[in-house]
Image (cartoon, rainbow, N blue to C red; front, top):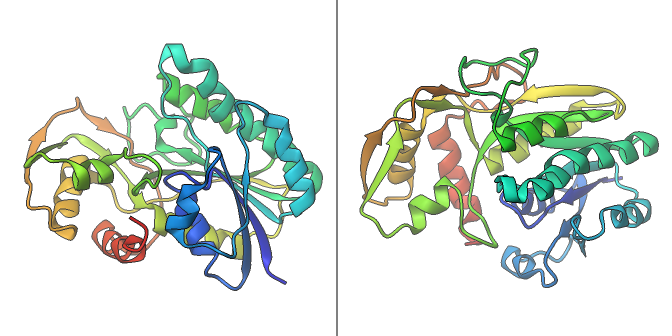
Length: 287
């Protein structure tokens, strides 16, 4: 019997790729939630086998219970995150980044559902680098603080990663910026280090986790990503893979190193260029 997966935030950067990928795998039956009233993204994804449910956590958080009880998923993957964490938006960011994963985790624990929560390397300040899962998160910005709080789940799997991908509903992120930008030059930080991973490759890592994990009531943290790279070198690789012919210049961020120790079974063996080539081919029919 296929494993039933419910993806929260299926319209987002990671969520729509997870929805598309898992819907093509015979071992899984996938469902998704979206926030807007008209799921235009489903038409672009060309999905017929992945039922979608409208759910706005900001308006009615507890209503998700009804769909969870109805669908009886084996797995819930939380792809919801709010990046706009300025002081005036902090209440909204706290609800989505902090309270929501704690709330869903509690439901999953009671129902023996495996909860996978997507966190970020942004829980770390970037002052040290090569962070392992035992290091204490030390971010001091609003986004990092809300994501740290969101990791206080009762049970489930926390994945810290820095994803690279395109958006289907609105354009933001480094890949959209590079592809859609009209400028002939792009400037990247030579002293900002991180472990980028494409959304497609992260979804494949999640698939590995699903095949290995047997106990939904354990709590584990995984750092998943590629080899450490600077933002400047990432722009050069994007420029090459997408044949953008931009002039890539350098700038400085002030020595930020958010690299993660990713020496585990679930991190990809492919380098970021190989991942981007595969991602480009997989996503060409979407954008």
